[in-house]
Image 1 (cartoon, rainbow, N blue to C red):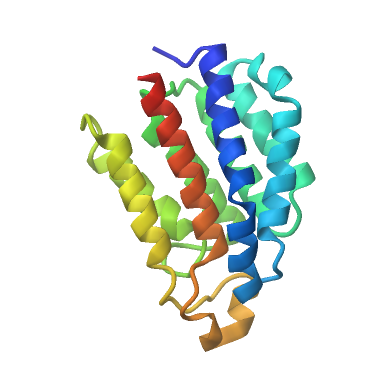
Image 2 (cartoon, helix red, strand yellow; image 1 turned 60 degrees about the vertical axis):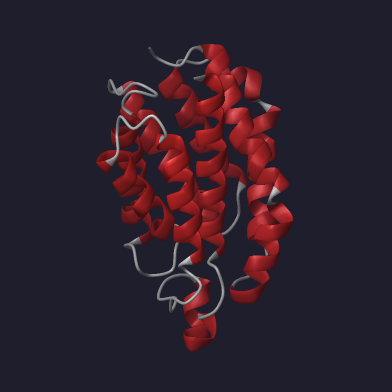
Length: 207
């Protein structure tokens, strides 16, 4: 059964609210190895999403998710806007093309991961948001059908974000620091973790 309009509204709202609440943490992480504005930028973008939540949720599911992506591209500064925007637009396009939520979550998610990888010219292991998104995708595929799948995905996302701390950054602003980037959790990995938790929790509540 596909997500209806009310469920889509709850899902998007939950994700936006969790990112906004996490803004101070994300900013602090980014102050250590980036420009110090990741939390501020993400907060601004998801506040813009919440500001038009009724209009977004009234659209068909795929269009709703694509609109989230377009909103983030237009309102989130730095690299995060295009990356997260690409993720949501690709997921939305997958849904428009026939993928259903939550049944086809893994393959829709895969479209978003591929879009981020292409946009950032990055792969897992380079201390980026992909170091959370790729393990989450692997879990969605390998453990599909588990009754506790959402819990497992949350566990994987949390551990994956923490595993970015000992990594050497080779992409983005953090890469300019060289070895000094080691010892800090990647802000993009952490914000990806926040989003994954919010979405999983919303899906679990719905089920």
